[in-house]
Length: 213
Image (cartoon, rainbow, N blue to C red; front, top):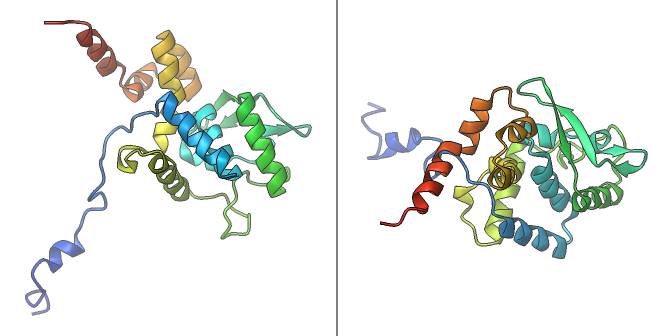
C-alpha cells in the first residue's frame, strides 16, 4: 500500500540520477584570455589562496586529488618557492615533475606568508579540520565553478580537468609534441595522452577547416 500511495512522480524523484542537469564528457581547456581574465579578477579581489591554487593548477597539470594534497615542502625549499617540483601521483604511484612560473611562485609565496603555512602543513588546508586536512576535491570543484562563472563562462561546461588540460593543450597546439605532453601529464601510455587531448578529433577538424567548398 505504501508504494501504491506514493504521489505521482514521487518514485521518479527518489531515483533521480546524480548527473541530472550536468553536462558530461571531456571538459574543454581554458583559453589563454580566459586564464588571464580569471587571474586578474582573483588578483583584484586579493583572493590569495584562490590565486595560488588556480596558478598551481595551471602550471602543475596535476589531477585534483594530487593538487589539493600538496604540502608546503612540495613547493618551498630554503624559504623560497622552487622553480620546479616533483610529486608522486596517487593514481599511478609514479613521480611527475612540473614547473612553477614566476607569477605562480609569487602567488604561492604570498599565500604561504599570509596564511602562516609551515613545512609539513598542507598548502591548501580545510578550514573545517583546523588545517589538519587539505580542502576536498569537491571544494576545489566548487571553487572552479565560481572562477569560470565570474568571467561569464558556463560552469557546467568546465571542470577541474579543464585546468589540468589547459597548458598541455596549448603546448600541443604550438609544438605538436605528444611525447612532451605525455611526460608533463605523467601518463604511462601515449595512447592515454592522445585520448586525453582529443588529438585525433582536433587534428581532423583543423584539416577540415582549411578546406573551402
